Image 1 (cartoon, rainbow, N blue to C red):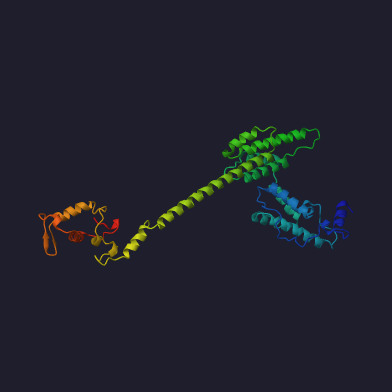
Image 2: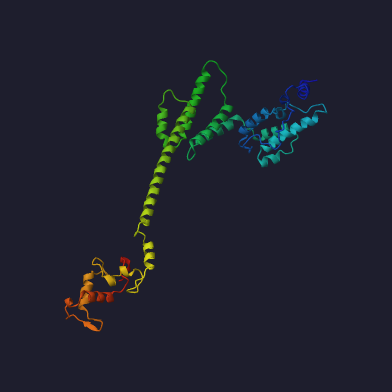
Length: 356
């Protein structure tokens, strides 16, 4: 019996103490419709997708089904169990693909076949992918993004770059120096893509000694962003309070007696004078009965001009003729008020009632 057969036989033996150590074991929560990773594979994100998928399958002890470490057993009694696990892993892979990609690998015989098909199509050599990552890093800008979103996108590119160009292990201290240079380079890349509103903070960070790490720089910029948000919120609350105060003052002015022309017009329309039979005022407010105030103009002329004009114009009042030759002092005050009342042309109460 070769090593592969021994490994497979051991894997499917019933002597395993913990069932979780058996790759053929399926938990009741292991549904074929489960989505292990997100976002799904679209083609361009293969490097991140395959890394996330490996971690998910390893956590469920099913990674051997796609790497070929767990092959179909030779014992007929173990084949149905292996097929069930193989179909389960294949379903997980299909559920983690874009629908167009899933239909292209649906007829793969095993999970390993599907896995290798995707690798052959989308796996890129390190050099072209590294060039693409560096290009994306250099062109990434914050613009309207928040500091957190901008840094997260940048860090994802850094991590993928590190997975391609990892430093070799070393105990002489060279690796530490190289790591510090990488950190400094990342700080520069992060500061270059920041919005110009952070230019002052950027200048201050570049003067810090010793030079801070990229995480420390992100913390400083994030604190500055939050402080600005608090200031904007405070200013907005002050403006809102001022607006409410302005509206309240205007509303109070409109409710003050005499300040609402619509209410005054409504109240005047409900009044009727029993003396002159006109609307808009009562008998207590009738100018024809009580006289006109000297301060009120009429038709753009002072009241005294109307008095002189009335005294100089012949008028018939109660059958008698008043002419220019008659002195005005011969007309008593009551009679003169009646004359003025007859020459009036409108309901003279408010200023809006004077007609011209």
